[in-house]
Length: 331
Image (cartoon, rainbow, N blue to C red; front, side):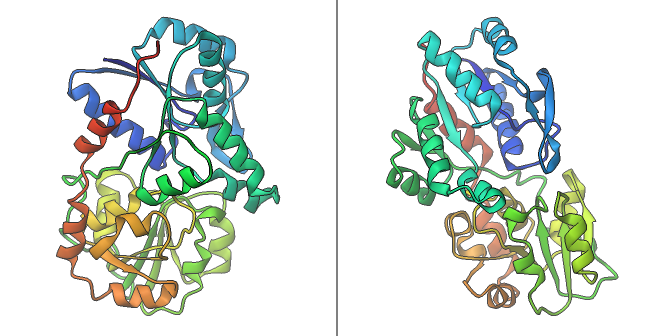
């Protein structure tokens, strides 16, 4: 199979969408398929307002047509609803090409939080975008049910995976010198992640934030006793997870949360709200509670082996196989 993925989220961005697409592409190529990704780096682009590290393609349609003609794929998947996704959808409509999409981000809530635009309007635009395709991949049963309830058609299940070789229990000295227990957040530092709900908690030990983003400076000034560690990657990130006693996930809007799997694979149990993402992923590997402080303290009692066992239920091989099975030929 020759697969083309079009995504507004691509390197050098650091987020769950990029990591997922990278791993799926790698797994499919290991199976013998040819996979190309078209991202914003191949076009004139500009920084997304408020997110200097996120680049968006500027008026990409003409150049995109040429790239699609050169690629001549058997299957086409549109991963995101940004400028590239919208342009690809329009070209596919012109040519009568079939394609699939995936739903990664709850933009309706994110945009409403920043602009006050009613989320119902954004949901209507998202529904129109995805319903033009032959199927929309949803990461969890809870998300699948919500999309169907909101009028999305042909919603298909597609889980995620974790690198069990990279993320594993081991030496736990990443935060030596900081008073324990270590309550750790990992991910983008942005308003939609609801990080202040974690940083406001009265907890023993030390709160650590691994990651960066537009809210970091404000949070760092507001919470001087929190240890902000910046981005970690690869083995450094795995080491950071292992050093935590609890991974705290305060987001109420994530559709999955790859960091949940990475933390649990590293032996670190999770504390989170009982919402989409954690409700489908955490299981016995942590504690979900509307009282996040209570979840954090209870998660200290979850055995690290139990967290690891929960993560082992997810594999990138199964994720890639499910992805491929649900693709459609373009004509």
